[in-house]
Image (tube, rainbow, N blue to C red; front, side, top):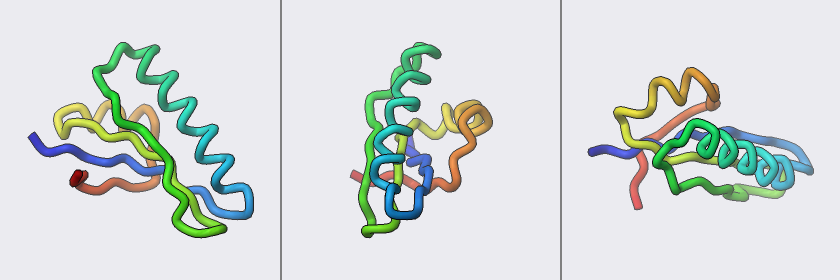
Length: 78
């Protein structure tokens, strides 16, 4: 099954701190909804751009996308 990476973009000098904080909320959502998701994270793309992400199976994507409203998504490759 294909895996999708749901991505939230944060920009500005505090982008890394905001992405880290957003990841906390993603983990809380996973716990609250009792989802079988273990892959979340953050990536610093530059000094002014960071992302928080969540990797889901393709069949899980629509309800999670609708609830959490990621900025974008892409096919996840390890």
